[in-house]
Image 1 (spheres, rainbow, N blue to C red):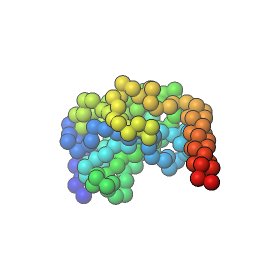
Image 2: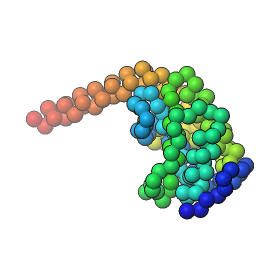
Image 3: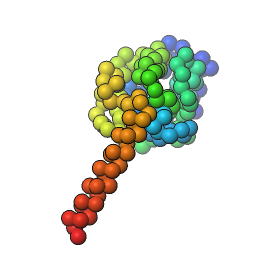
Image 4: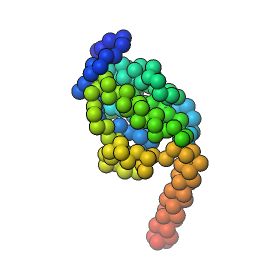
Length: 160
């Protein structure tokens, strides 16, 4: 494990963090998904992931939890998971965390993917793609589950 430094300085994580983050694709460890958004960064080595995690955890933006994956993903990278509470400051907090991360990664144009759209999106479309209202999020999730159940029943009946 390569430990970069106790305090991360400007540009120190350049070329170590991917410019596309995942939003709402992972389950929260601390609360229900309707209440928490998981923002996930992909980082090329464990030391850089620990540094990014510590940097975000001590930033001025309010996050609920920050954690580094115990092992690498299929691409060989570590994940840094940042849990942020859903609510009217969600988009502002995500933008702030990414802006802070830009200082140490020198990434100027972040992109994101969600469970709904696997294609990377510009951060400009954050509000349209990431639900900040817990009740609305739950309503949409329940409607999608009902739709899936209905489709499965129709497929079953078509084969019957």
